Each structure stands twice: as structure tokens, then as C-alpha cells.
Image (cartoon, rainbow, N blue to C red; front, side, top):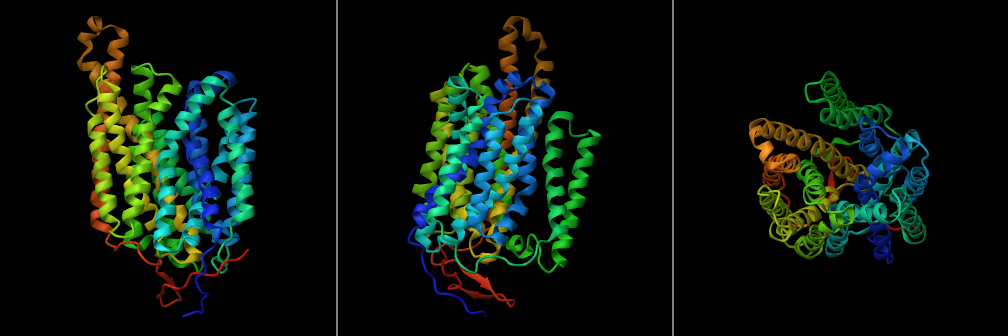
Length: 506
């Protein structure tokens, strides 16, 4: 077994966490903040209805497609360097987006945001994984991170609503600049990455090409399914290409000496269970953000700011579930006893929302549903984030972190396309079967009832998806509680050494 340095806790790790949290919040809220600003940007820049979705897609494709590469770069260059570079690049891309004079400039800025986000996000999570190694501290750190990862999207809706309504859509881009500058300056001054935790092997170029093309094909396939239909030639072609490319990627990774994604990272049943259950849960989560935003704004007539504030109970629930339930129990009970009940509690919240009507009360229906959803997701996300990087070799922390982000990103793309398609089909069916009621109800009321039926139908599917997430956790996640130092496998024979946590470097 190779000789290892003694465990040395970084005295500035909590300060470092603050700057990592700021960066993570910026990346997560950017996934939703632009959604609210999109109608204004579309009008201002003359973007057609057919092309407006490209503003969202450009970010999702670059981010989802490059995450594994970004995680590997973080392992190779060092997480602090990748983190800082990602922040600087993200700030520059945001400035370009805010100053966009036409559609092409905006799309380019969004793609650049996604690319630098793919470098930044895995670097942030892997920094936590290698800096916080004591069980209780790790629980607190991942509790904060989990709350941000879960609730950041809702914060983006609030901030996006404020900026769009009271300033200008361009500020949904410019607001990233102070976030990035503060986080980058803080990272430069206080983050110290453990020595010896980098992966000095060369880049796996075939793996990078296959993984990037495969993930882009998969994410774009779901995007095209939403716009063109599931049976369209382009949609089927993209899904076939994704399967072929990702199977080829897995074969290459099993053969090369220095793989982009070492199969040992995903072959572990606990980590595999986390990646799969988290990706499924995000499908339900993104669908909810979408339908609840439509319901509140279109059916209930809320303004963008009111809609943002309407999501606050969910954010509060997530923070409580993550920091007060998950973080307190993570070192005492098995992750499955937090994750499975958490997903089931969120499913109960979703179940309440299946009862929505055009005249449903916010306090009587939406509020309790959001509180249960937030508590459930916060409780489940927190141990999931920690378990995804728990026990991996330090040199693999970046790609393990990238897999967490990849499962969430792919889950988000699937959730938006799949549940939107289900809702649209349900609306069409309802209109056909209730056409005789249209004259009596009036055009607006009839359209609202059809839309709410579509939302409720799709949310039923989300309930089932969350129950499936819980079942996957029960079946696959069998590790004990995350107490003590993470066991890190070292050496070619796979000897386990709990002290193999490298010393710190300035």
C-alpha cells in the first residue's frame, strides 16, 4: 500500500465552504432564472417562437455534454484551479449574454455559460469531498450544499421575477458577475486543496469525444422529442446515436489505461443507486417547477415576482430537510433510511398537487404540497450528495462529482420533455372529450381547465417516478451511516485505508 500523509484538517475550510456555496447557488439558479426573463429577451431581440427554446437548450447541451470532461479536468489540473477558471469564464459568458445584441450572441453566451458551468460544478462538489473528511463536519457541509442544490432553482425563479419586472431581462445575466467575482476572489485566498489528490494520468481523448457526443445526443433527443414528437425521425435518430455512443464509451473505458470515467466509480452499487435515484427525482422536480409556474402565472394570474415568492415554502422545506434532518441524522443512520422516506414524502406532496383545480386555494393546496416536497427532497438530496463522493479515491473525486451533476442535468432534460409531452397529450384528449362544454364555460375558462387537467395528469407521473426513486434506493443503497472518515481505496489491489487523506497545500 502506498505511503500516505496524515490527515490534516484545513483551518479555513468553513470559509472555503461559503465561497463554494456562492458558486453553486449561481450555477443552480442560472438553470431557472433565465426562464422567467425569456419572454422579455425574445421580444427585445426578435427571437421567433420556434427558436426561443434554443436559449435554454444551448445551456443544457453544453452543460450536460461537458460535465464528465469538466470533472476530469478538475482531477487533472486541480479543483481549486478548475473552480476559479470556471468562475471567471462563467462571469465573462454572463457579461456577453447581458450585452447580447442579437439572437446568435445570446445563444453563444448561453453555450459558454454551460461549458464553464460544466467545469465549475464538479470542481465545487469535489472540493467539498476532499476538504471535509470528518463525519459530523461533512454532514454539515453537505447539508448546506444539498439545500442550495435543491432550492437554488426556486431562488432563481424569485430573483428572475424581481430582475425582469423591476429592472431588465439583461440583469438575469449581469447578476452572475458579482457572484462569480466574490467566489473567485474567496477561492483564491482561502481554498487549499489537499496535496496528492490530483489524477496525473493523461486525458482519455476517445472517452471525452464519445461521452460528450453521447450525452449531447441524449439531452438533445429529449429536447427534440418535446418539440417534434417522440416518433419523429430526428428524435429517434438522436436516441439511437446516444445509445451507440454511450455503449461505445463504456467499452472504451473498460479498456484504456487512464479512463475518463473509471468504471469503479459507477460500478459501486451505492453510488450507482444514488446517480439513478437522483436523476429520476430531478425528472419529477423539474416537471413540478414547470407546471407550478404555468399554473400560478397563467391560471391564477400571479406576476413573476408573486410566482417566485410562491415557491418560498419549498425552499424553506428544503433547507430544513437538508440542514436539520439530513445533516443531523446522516452520521447516525443509513443513507437509505433518509433517502427513501425523503423521496416518499416528496411523492405525498406531489400527490396533493394532483388534486389541483382552476379555483384551488394556494394556502389550502399549493402551500402544504410545497412544504412536504421541500422537506422530502432536502432530506433525500443531502445524504445522496455526500454518498455520491463518499469513499472514492481522491483522484476520482472530480468525475464522481461530475456524475452527480450529469444525472441531475439529464434528469432535468428528461423531466421537461417527458412531462411536458404527457401534459400536452392530456390537454388534447380533454379538449376533445369536453368540446361540448366550451360555449358554456367561455374560451379562457375552458382553456384553463384543460391546462390544469394536463398539469395534474403529468404530476401523477411525477408521483410514480418519485416512488420508483425510493424503490431504487431500497434495492441498491445498502451502506451503513456515513460516520467516521470516508474509506478511500488505494493501491491496485484495492486495499482500504481510512487514513489515506492527503495533506493540505497552500
